[in-house]
Image (cartoon, rainbow, N blue to C red):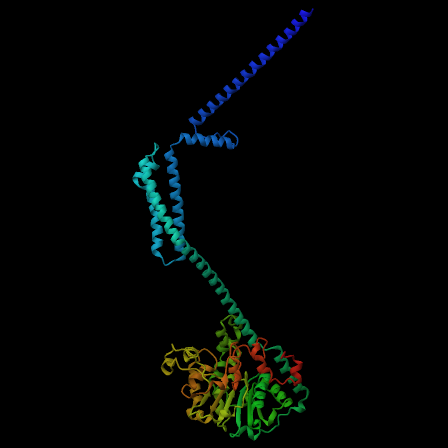
Length: 565
């Protein structure tokens, strides 16, 4: 019983042992089988890769990094190492060709004055290309399907390295210079673009300034309307039956001529003269305006009489009957249908011209008021001397010494304005015209209107008005000068002008912001010539108070019209 049991156990144990032996054998057999399968798979894969290495499997999925690595490995083992070396040399040469061409392009763009370097860059790029197409290199290295000739490759590599070394030296030498030149060129392009914008802005600013200067300010229009309203409302206070004063023709007194249609401007000129005169009762003012503004002027000086006992005569241009079209060339030219069309019908077109051309079309130069200065001896036949003042001046000192200056038989005493090559006759007259070239010196110094002492006796003797008529008739087609009264004045008084000390007349307060205050304070007369008149909002603030202090602020209409002074 016991034996049976042991046998049973032994059998069980032997059976268990056999089962364990069977499991171990099966395990090792399975490992051998798997190894064999992997070996076969590896050999199959290797055979496929080696037999067709360059043909991709279009039916396979995306390659894994492992597959790519295996493929590159087998390709490297299968390829000629000299081919790989050739590819690296070729890539290095190509990279340097690109770099050399880039610097050559920079040099051409920048227009550098280093043509030698530009030629060297071009030659170097060509040499790189020539290396590839040389018969030995081309035949052995690039066109042959067989193994690479190592000797030819070494020679090719040596030549490429030499060229690369040369290219690197040249680039290192030129890099900083080319980079700086490129920055300079970009900066120059920027400056050019900004300068174009600046020129455009200046033109627009000049046009806007011109419009502001030539338009009648609301305050000035208001003042004229208030004065006329006063005249209409109280006609009994403004009768025209006053007899001319004998002082108006007394040659022993100091006479001034002021021609203007600006009421406030005339009042400032008169007040500044009187307030700085030592003997104001000896000063006589001859004010001439147009018919439209005559009544307003009369009302002003009736309500605010000239102080200090000074005398004032008020007339209109139309009161001088000798000024008609049969005598005055300018009137004939102004009344011509062609000129009226030019000035009045083309205002929109004319408004787009340059500032200089705008001046030609300005209504100021169409007014006979501006040309009265050429008829002073006939307007005031009993006077010997007269001081002409523009309406945009301010008098700061007593001017009686001007009548005591010896003009040496000259007609016109004026301050010269030339300095260097500026303000010479060539800037005002057309010296391409033979008549101008024949009679005048282009380098002759110009002088200024605005404050001029005229010897009327010498004027009559020299027949200056006849000279003016002669040249004005010749300039009917605007071929001798463009516009204004200064060019014909320079011609009329070409050899009959005496230069005065510059302290008598300082100009530029209507456009030049950098005039010395010492020069202004020492001046007898300051002149707001230019577009920035002191009664306009665009006036230069640093000079405006020199004018406003002579404005009669106690005048009720000045306050009502809000001059903003």
